[in-house]
Length: 403
Image 1 (cartoon, rainbow, N blue to C red):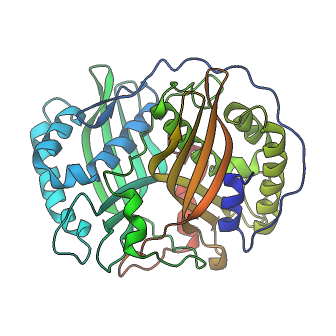
Image 2 (image 1 turned 120 degrees about the horizontal axis):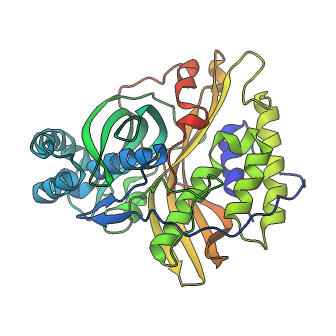
């Protein structure tokens, strides 16, 4: 079995390595049912817990919806989505703002072809970091660091990536988080891993609107802080796969052994738990040694290890009520935020296949396997930001909500 950690270490270190055996994980009790079930209304995920994680999930989902193909190209669908997302009294203004932003963005879905079409458009958003700027029971403000990929799977121009900083203001209304306002500026630019070359447009055909779905984050969690139990359906399997890849990319996975063991016990199937724990213990040690990182996640000079994985899209390879296989297209960032520019965080665009089984009342992973990169073109006319500027997106407090 090749784990997601094996993928990330190849991105976060200078060269791949083979893990060595280590200790097994601790036991974990059966998951509790998810009482905060996110559902969809006019294509918008709704129904979030009144927590910081719930606010992060709402901010992320609303931003993803606002960058989707249907939102950007269909005015009626866009206005219906805005009516679902927007707080009372803000829908009209939000719709006007969204119309203007969509008119500016829609041409990016054409690539070098003559028109925009659902058969070829690529419009995906991944959330790499979510920082809560303010929160109470009545409102929240969340700043997201996102990467977008837009373009066409036809023609000769490879879809392009971009990075944004999106500030989302939410209010608690009608027992849910509602959008009060949103603004976007240029975000931190991470260079694409030097070992990854851009794919040709046709390689992206598996992630056009009709072939794949956006990830949906819930912000729901068990008492142990890990994702609550998932539904025994295809949507639940997709959500479990999304959360698994995000948790494997969390910096705590590498620097906090107890957190890693509890996470694996909560998400991995019992028949692979021992082997995956041994493999990932070795992987984590390797990353820390190669990066010179201590147990606090920092180097001797105070530089911080930065790792994140953002799912861009999901699609089912196979599904039954006993087992599922889900493919995800992801953006993984890894490196060190400090003065050493040779360790500057880089982004790798990977496809991963997550195999799952139904066990103990939820979906558990049996393998997370790389299935080849899918790499867009780098941001046009933008230089990568200095290594030390990435410190603001690290740490557990900046982790996005899981699915």
